[in-house]
Image 1: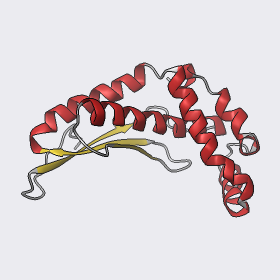
Image 2: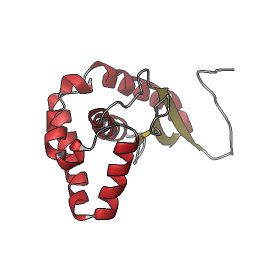
Image 3: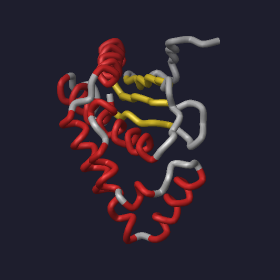
Image 4: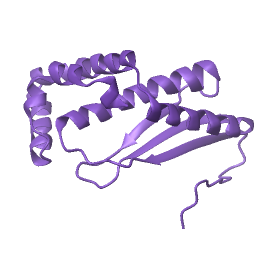
Length: 166
């Protein structure tokens, strides 16, 4: 049975791990654009995690947001994780809920441009790495994303708008 919250005492340490799992409503990756957008969203989410959970609230030194998705799978899971003091569980839960809500309301143009630059920087080396490029071409071909984006990474990433990201 589904339970929206599960509290488990795994050990008797005075610290806790808080993990929020969100399942996306429309996870289907129909194109290279949506694959790029997911990667950019991951970057925006992590930047906000660092800003809000670490810098503003000081809850965790290395909070983390990540997407767990497999090509052609019907769901896309997002996980938001913090390691905190047991006393800060409620604060962490509120902070993560607020962060998730803010991601669904607005992603700014600045965040979109920054994420695009980071994605471009990470994917640019593909042109000089035949093994990795071959893997990406096979993946994009197999799942019907189209391979044009892999040869025009900068154009594809810069074409994605903040409105699309939101």
